[in-house]
Length: 335
Image 1 (cartoon, rainbow, N blue to C red):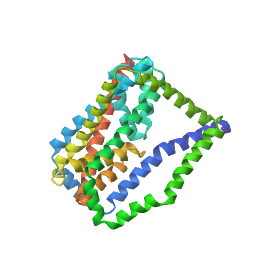
Image 2 (cartoon, rainbow, N blue to C red):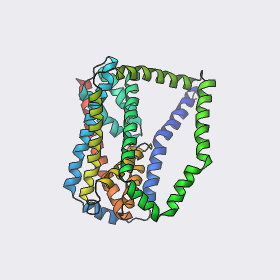
Image 3 (cartoon, rainbow, N blue to C red):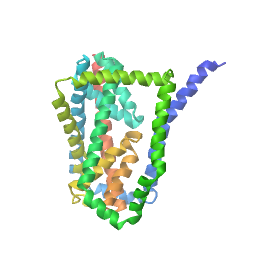
Image 4 (cartoon, helix red, strand yellow):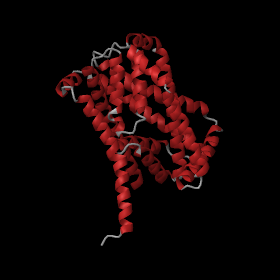
């Protein structure tokens, strides 16, 4: 007879797996279905097949370059904490982490911290704190990219809104709606109440401990003498990612003449979409890219073909690089 105590953790584990794996995958599949429900797949394939594959494949170098520089930046975060992990191990873990994200969204972040902790004998909590800091840097950078992209394209958007009064009215309606501000205030009050009156709760204590540890780590990182290198690496990472995306514009006849501004907007929206938990960006990434391209006059079919082809090629590349990183870590472990 099965022990009820043992059965409860099994049910909990199954529920966690469902939430972490099935729901994001279902979201991605639903979005893909929604995108393709009125699109002829064979037409999409004909467009992708006719792309300049030499250009598509050449863009992949910049994706690997960006992820490699990310390893050097991570090392800058870890070193002030008193540890000196090998950059090669950090890079292999980063490659592998992105591949793991295709199986379980966001799991790659935990996985790469665990692999580096085992290989380099760095406490997992310290690595997790640097990973969160790494994500904060990325979030701020993406928001800056979005801001710059919209500033550069401001005149274009004003013109578009003039010709689309309903969209303009919708945006104004959202900004003027009291509900928006009520929700913001309610969220702030709820957060205050939880941390003020439930401070002995296990989850609240855990969050506080993580924040305290991160604060101490950030103070140590702030005192480091390599701030310029940190900034330079951050810029280099995102410039590489931009070229990773923008070069693909020149592989298709209908995007090669859109220009830098359109490429920046599409890149900004696609980067924002990666904040939505899904398998490697499956679904939200395509929606963002298609929305950006159609905004600049690209047909729905062509935009869908572009997003599908680029995501597939770059997705396969990420998985190949990830398997290489995992294999290299396994080899190091055996040695």
